[in-house]
Length: 165
Image (cartoon, rainbow, N blue to C red; front, side, top):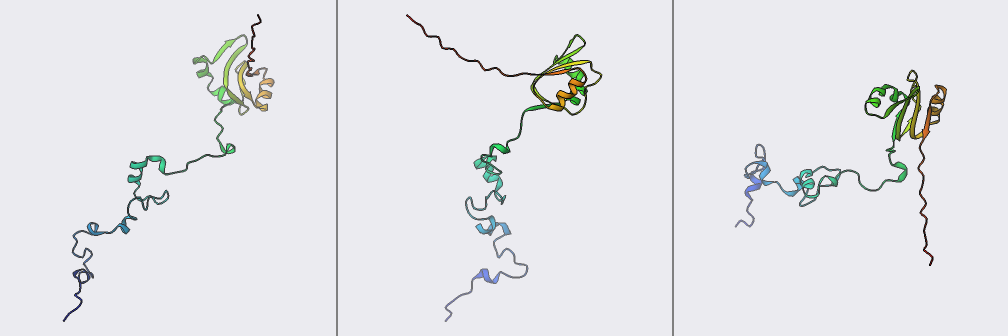
């Protein structure tokens, strides 16, 4: 009497029997081939099931997040070189940023920091209004007879008026 019958599956393994009677290979694969069940295998570095994760949680799931230190923040202030002012001078006149005055031009760049790269010769006398300026830019403007006026924000002091009876 036979106590243990051999399963059909074990007989179907071997050469040229990749499916073992289950049709195509993808039909009878377990969760191990998919990286696990549920959210398994969706780690930020793994990239498995990426479409599933982005559909459920959005594109913010992957990549760097969190607070960076203040020292690593990018400087987002507007900066412009003297050479850039010279090369774009015609556009500055068209936009009304550079206005003609006696002997030259007055350029209104109140939101910009002026840097000293390049030169602004052959433009006449220039008066540039800016938020800040580098020492080299101030020196170059002084040498050609122009000037950079640095705009300083004034703080308003609120005065309390008390009514006396």
